[in-house]
Each structure stands twice: as structure tokens, then as C-alpha cells.
Length: 395
Image 1: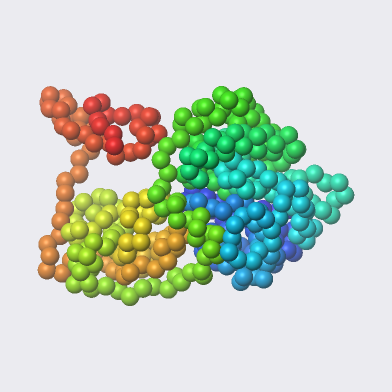
Image 2 (image 1 turned 180 degrees about the horizontal axis):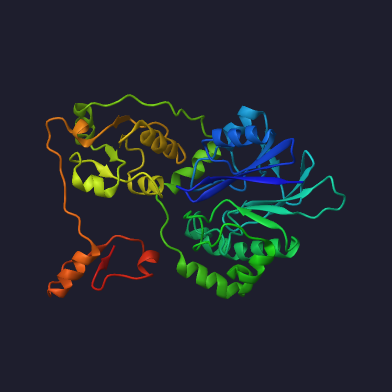
């Protein structure tokens, strides 16, 4: 019997998996803070012997390299992935035995050229067919992984490959096979908005556009719908190919108001983790507000010039620790400093800044009075496609 445990990373829209047979376990696409994987294995009472990567990730720094080191597990990647460390290279059609589980490697290019999926069957049952498949950035729930992250020279080729890979999975696996993708839960690695939290090959055959539409039509619509992706993605592939270092989640030194002002004046990012409402009511001049929660780290990594020192301001040590954990997932290993408490504790003699917030009812009242205020809509194009304020301007 195969048990699959899911480790969610909502801030990045990804999932990692631990699958076990009651004694030994394999891990697929672990995040860099792999202590969560250790905790899942300990709670299940199983031993991790194999760590699989479906691809060289573009949206986060992997924890697979260090997890394999910490557990003594085999670290398995596509044999054609150009990495600078020793690993177990695997290829299409190869079967890896993990306890009683048999893992069949499937080459499913599309998200990347060397992307792999892993179909798992119960090896204790003679002739057993796969019951689960880990699809990484290939077949997602109602979608597929996007094909444009390696640059425009590869996009068209990868888009066509992604269609064929989805068809291959549908053709070679039983309809009852459960699908466990890495992306598609808010990740920008998803080509379109994925749907649902669970699915099977049979369910995807009935509803996934990659499996219900002809190749040319699907590719054309897919490419037309692709939007921008986070700028920090450019740094993730090289970090993963080099073998990421272990992380340090110990708390950095606390900064006093004078140090915070020096860092702000030097052009560093001093990030206020409070809600937008709290920030508007009072904040340190020159700080940046990205509220902790949702896709905090995605937007911080997207907007901040890469390599800029980051200082975190939070209401509590727990808030700062949560933000620090999210930062290491995209390769921002240590905040330059932290501070906790209230904005009055951070500003020193400098007065706090504030600004007025308005509601949509306030905006409607302005329209009713005949005034036409300038409205800048800073949402992304797919969000604006769902509806806009009349007369607003997008970026």
C-alpha cells in the first residue's frame, strides 16, 4: 500500500510530497526548508531513502540536495541535467525500487526539456499498475506547466512537447491513477489557473484542455494566454544546478532606529510585514510594505532588485521568523537585520508617515458627484481581465 503525504507551500503555490510503504519513503520536489519533510517522515515512522526532482526548478531553491545529504538518501535527477554535484542520473523507462514501491521514470518535456514524471506502483503485488503519478510541472489540475521559462527561443518547442507529454501520461497510465503535481496551486509556473486540489488521469482526460483539444489549437491558446512571471526566476535554475547550501533560520540581530535609517538611506529594502491598513495608519518613512501572507515572498522577490539587502520589520518575532523562512525558499538566505514591535519603536525621532485609504464606495461617490479621479490599477493583466473600474488605467 502506498501512502502519499503532501507538504504545502502556499506562498509559492507549490506542493512537495512524501510517499511511503509503511517503512521507507521517497520524497518528490522538496522545498529548501526540508525540516518539514523530516517532521512528516518522523510522524509517519518511516525512513527517507530516495529524493526525486521532477526538474531543475525555476520558482524556488530546492531542498532536495541538502535533504539527501542529511538523510543519506539517493538524490535522483534526469541524467541529462547539467549539475555540478554528484547525483543518481535516471532516464525514461527506468524503474527504481523504493522498499515495496516501484517508481517508473517518464520523460515528460514541456515545462523544461529534461522534465520527468514518476509513476509509482505497489511492487508487492505482481503486475500491479501505477496508482499514483508525480507530475511536477507537466500535467496539472486542469492545466499544464508553462513552457516559456527557459526563454523565447525554447517556448514554441516546449509548448508542443508539453501537449505530447500530457497525452503520453493519459495514454500510458490507468484512469484511476491519482495525479500529484508540484505546481498549480497559485504558482506562476502554471500556464493557466489550475483548478481543484485533487484529480486523476481519468478526470483530466475529460476536462484538461491539453487532453481535449487538438495540438495546434491548444498551443495557440496557451501561448496567447501567457503573462509575465517573477523576475527572480532567472536566479533559481543556476542556484539549483550548483547545489544549494544548507539554510540558517536563526534570528539575525535586532536593529535600532538609527541602523534602520542608515539602511533606508543607503537604498536597502526595509520591509514592513504588517497589513496594508496598519501600514497606511503609520509607518517609518522609506520602508516598503509587503504584508506577510498570501504570495508575500513571490512579490518581494519579483519587485526587489536582486541582491539588495533586506531588513524585516514585524509585530512579533514569529512574524519575522515566518518571513525569513519564506525568503530562504527563493535564495535570500539571511536578512541584513530585523526589528519587532510597533512603528513607534522603529522610527526614533523621525515622524511616522501615513496616508488616507479609500473604499470602492468612496470611489463610486466621486463618480456620482461627476468627478473623474485618475485610477491606476496595479493588478496583473489576467486579474484585470476579470473586471476593471471604468476609466482605470493598467500598468
